[in-house]
Length: 394
Image (tube, rainbow, N blue to C red; front, side):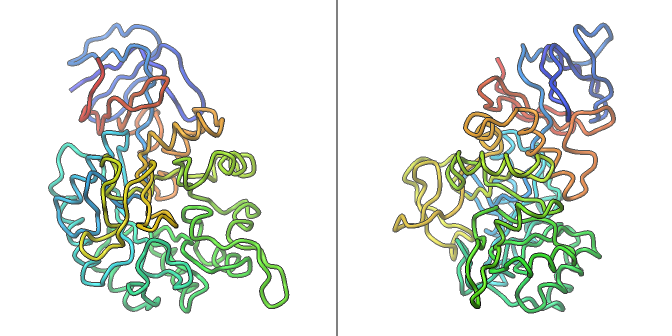
C-alpha cells in the first residue's frame, strides 16, 4: 500500500521543512516532497499544517493505563504499550524494576509472548531491567527487599534465557559491577548507571568498562560530597564533566523543575541527552487513584497526585505519569529548547543508544514510524510501520 502524507511541517534530524510531505510504501519512507504530490497513491492524508515528527522512542517506561510491565501478563504488556502509543510512542523498551525474582522471570516471559502476538501497537524493541542490581543505599521507588547482588552467573543465565534484554541498569560500585559492564558491552547491551552510590572514580572505571548512560539524571544519583575527608564528584557532576557520558532525563517538569532542565540543556549538548517518561501504571488514570509501582501485588503503594505519582506520605515521588509528547512539550515550553532538539532527544538519541538504526528520524529508507501534533505538542495521531494506528485528526 502506498500512502501519501501531505501539507505538514516535517521535522528531520536537522530542521523543519514547511509545507512538505512523505510518500510511504511497504512500511518505509520512500520520498520526502515539497508542496503538492502529483503521483498516485492508495491513500492520501492531509495533516493540515501539523508537524510530522519521527515517532518517539522511550527507553525507560514501566507501564500505563493501569498496567505495569512487571505484572507478568501479556495483557499488561500490550495495554500499557498501547497507552503510550496514543501519545506518540512508536517504539519502546519496557522496563522492569526490582521485584521478587519469580515475578521478574514471569514478566520477562510475558513480554516475550506479548511481542509475538501484539497487533496495532508500538514496536517492542527489547527489555530494560532497571532492577534488581542497584544499590541498597539508593533504591528509590524500588522495594529494598527485592534488590539483589550482582551474580554474574545468574545474569549470564538470564541473558541466555532472553535475548531480548537490551538494557540493564546497575550500580557499578557494587561487587561485580565492573565485570557486569564488560559482559553487557561484549553482548551489545546498553549498560546504564542508576540507583547507585557511585562517585567520580567509580564512574570513570564504569565508563572504561562498558557503561555509557546515567539513568534518570539527578534521580537516584549521588552528588558532590565529602567522603573520607575528601570532596568527591558524584554522578551528577561527573555526568556534566564527561563528554562521552549520556544522560537520561525524566522530562515532566516535576522530577526536574524547569530551571534544572534549563541548566542541563545549557551544559550538556543535545546529542548526549535522552528524554524518557519513566512512567508507571498511573498514566491516563485520574487524580487521586491509588497505584503500585512495579508488580500490582508487591509494588510500593503510591497515589496519582499533581501530575506525578507520590508515595502515600507525600515525601517522595513514586514514579512518573508522563508521556513522550509531554516530555517534548515540557522541554520546549518550560526549558526553551528548540523543537528540533527536543524531538531528537525523544527519538534519534534513544534509538542510537540501543542501535535501532531504522528508527528515530525521518529520512528516506527509514521505518515509517511517525507522530503528528500541532503547535501545542499534543499528539493527535500515531503511525507505526506505515499504518495509522491512532488518529484523532479532524
